[in-house]
Image (cartoon, rainbow, N blue to C red; front, side):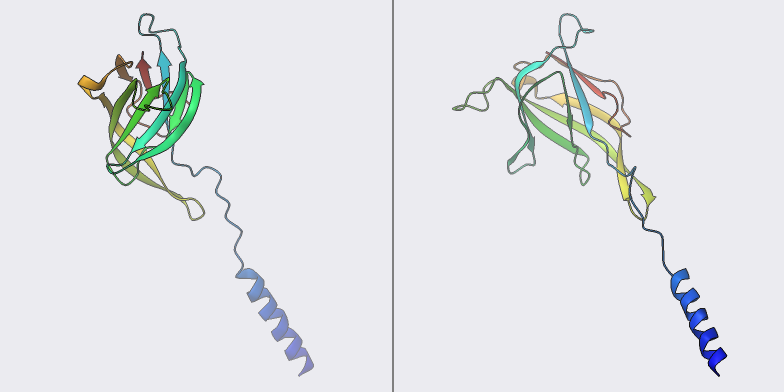
Length: 164
């Protein structure tokens, strides 16, 4: 009887530890950001920083700060995963009194593609058929938008060129 109890405990122990799963850690599960590089409008190969750049996301009812105040030649911004377009208000050298001074509105249209990565990471969204437009009457400092990559699957390289 004593041997039966020991054998039963050993079997239960093996069964208990075999039911454990390895911890899932998500390493490569990130929805990519849209990477924009700014170029000189006269020499389109020359990277040109935008002084005091402010980027605000537009969701139809309000403005959401994405980048508060930066002087950079490139930015990485998130696109909406629940819709097929995202609009941003890009301001160059805004003043405290008038944040719309020298601002352009850009809208990016795209298709979302959900891809299952793993149980730990879940789904990530890639973007396809990317296109970008500015409001024609509103273009104060942005001269042209060029799409370098219509498919966005990582944030390693620039997807959009903006000439200013």
